[in-house]
Every structure is written in C-alpha cells, then in structure tokens.
Length: 250
Image 1 (tube, rainbow, N blue to C red):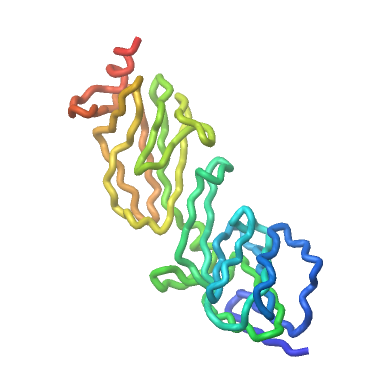
Image 2: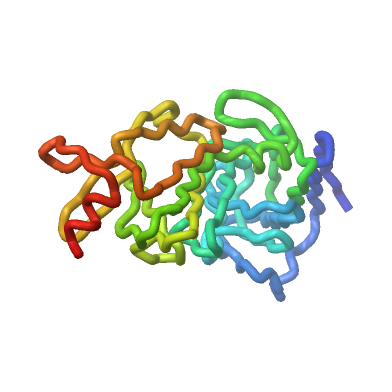
C-alpha cells in the first residue's frame, strides 16, 4: 500500500492508495464526485473553520462551517497547493452576528496524486500562515479578533444601535439594546483598521450619532458605554444629551 506523508509540526497529512469508503458518516457531508482522488478534512481544533479551498476546489459544507469535532470530504482532481480557509466567530450563538476571518492557509503544500484517498486533521497546534506571511499555531490566530462592546448604562432602551453598519442588540436579530445590557461584535482582518466612526442610534423616528467616535484596529478590544449624559448629534448638527432627547418624547 503506497503512502505519502507530509508532516509539519502537528499538522497531520496522510494519504493512502486505497478506495474511499462510500458510506460517509461525516456530519458536514461530502462535496461530490468530481475527480479521481478523495480528501477528508477533520476539525479537531477548538475553533469553527470555514470556506476551505484547495487547488480551486471548494469544500462546500452545509452550513458552510466545520464545527469542532466536525469534518467534510470530497472527490478532487490530482494537483498541489495550500489549503486556504477562514475562521468563523459567532456572537450570541447567531450566524448572522458572527464574523469570518479570512486569509489563512496551511504551512505545508498538499500534493494529491490520482487514485489517492486521504485525511487532513486540523488541531489547535497546527502551523498555519496568515495573509501577511506570519506563521503561528492555529490556536493563537484563532484567538486574535477585534471586538467592540457597547454597554447601555442609561435609563432607557436604545433602538437601532449600530457602528460601521453592524447592528448591536441584546438578543440575536433584535433591534434594541436593553438598559443594563451589552452587546459584543467581532471582526478580524479589519481592512478599516483605525476607522474613527460614531455610533448610530434611533430615538423616535430620528437618527442620531454619538459625538464621541470609536476606532477599532486590527486586534483591538474596545468598549463604548451609553449613559444619560451621552452627547448625541442630529442631522442638523445640534447636540443634546440622551436624557434631553428622550425626555422630549414623553
């Protein structure tokens, strides 16, 4: 039985020249028969990974992520190349509130020959490379995310709270930030690193922005706290406190 093994750090890459088992029990599914070789990818790391691409072949699992302990498989054409992928960071357990971290690849080149079937295992100690060419273990890159926390310490429920077109709400898919609660949103590979933007909220039927702006850099963890004295600006550049604006509605 022919074996080809490429081992870099704890990145496991094993191919064996034998027939692929057709009874696939992978909970993420298979990508279909498109070539003369097959590949199974297992995620034994602590992170959710997504959009795995090798040599033009996308391992399209449903729902587009591989959870810790999950796996995906597919039939592929022979060739060589890195496996590129993304991390997926979920907020509040909701897919639409998460963030994808793109630009990562395996440290080693994967070579696949006709008739091979094999398995790749991602662990927290797998060596990977980011979009800037920096090499580190998967665990360290997976924990590098930019976070903005918005805390509502005011006496009111805040509606339609957003920063940089990202919604902040107490509950998934909600439109409000309840008093005494907070919401966190995460990003990575921020191309707007250093952006200095206000937070937007809606009071009644009007939109306002905070006088204070927020800048979130590439791996920053920032926090903004609303209270009754927070200064807000309307479309005519008038400034009032949150308390003053909401009091006019009562």
